[in-house]
Length: 137
Image (cartoon, rainbow, N blue to C red):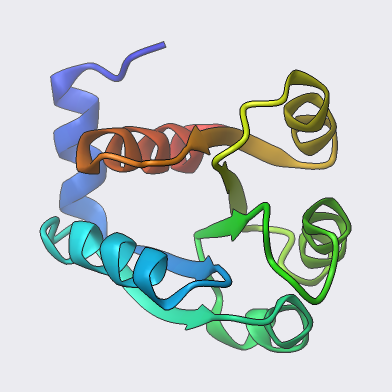
């Protein structure tokens, strides 16, 4: 369900949306970082290249949104999602992957993800999904 222009403007005026990115590639992280920097309503507060490190530290940052790459190497991404959901219960989760596999997406959504992005990601898609996830309960 798309947001009305009025609701979107009210949301954006209130505060920056604090985001953590968990990925296994520097290049993908840089692309997401550049996209987020173009929108003054988003703040990339940190990034992690290790799922285990992200789990142990994410609660220290009080994120609103956590992007989790399916291909994180040191832990299964669905298991990481389940663990971080417990550590950061107020955060909203967006799963990211090159693979658009319905069963995996279903499992991610049942495990707490609010939405899913298929790579390559565009700036418009990323912005839309962040706002969508942020406004979902």
